[in-house]
Image (cartoon, rainbow, N blue to C red; front, side, top):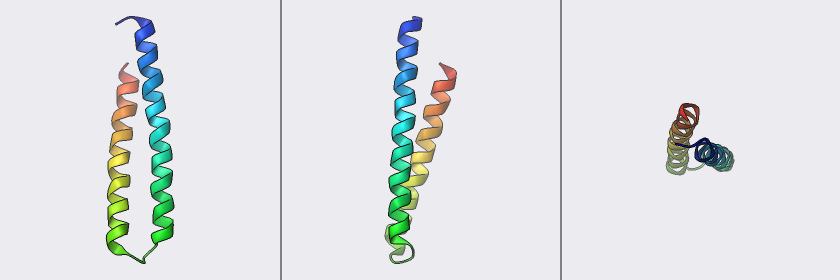
Length: 66
């Protein structure tokens, strides 16, 4: 793979990481609004946050291996 292609892929992965950071911030904002008012909604958002953390870990791993 040429270095130009590699660099562009790394840029996209970096953008994905930044987008996921924003997504996590929105999840945390939801949790702040929910507090302990609705346990089902709280669990759903907590699950979304966990999956987002995993996706971010995969993204960072892919970035470091490029």
